[in-house]
Image (cartoon, one colour):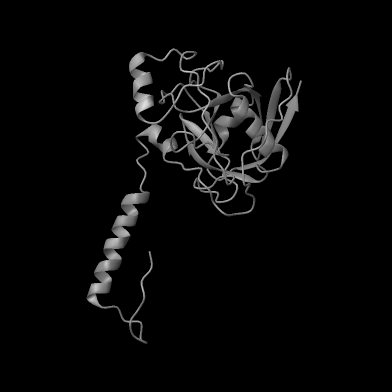
Length: 235
């Protein structure tokens, strides 16, 4: 919010002061986060378009090679984290992660959100505060039957605009998994998080990997630590 003085001496009228104060109050109300409501901490992060250092017009074309098992080494200022990527559970998501990593999108990123006992989150190259993305969004990949959702859970998700993706070997949310942050249905972009514990979250986040080594490094990550690069390997 901004305001403009109406005289050369930059004096504010009482009305101007009131408008500014009310505007500041509204801004605080909009941007304030309730850290006690853990699921909303991730859900409030938007990966919508944001101009910045590196953006793309569209999601990448599928480039994963059939039969290859992909993994990634996340190099951080605290050490290395190795994750197994789940191509069969989330092929489009893994493809997106591999593309961004190979194009150096994740180089010198910050971990902008860390909540001990819950998550570490990064991947916002352009804004570095949880409001940026790669310039595009893409769809969720969650097979509701594979993770055993009840009829009530499915109905609730459908009402919110989500849809199941049949044929995928989706896994349940648990400690050590790698998942996409989103701001609603089909709003995945570049931001991802690692779960630090078995904290229950709504089944609306695409899980696309799991930490296989370096969990001690994950536990040491703090806000502002650097994700130096993500190196993709295929077996």
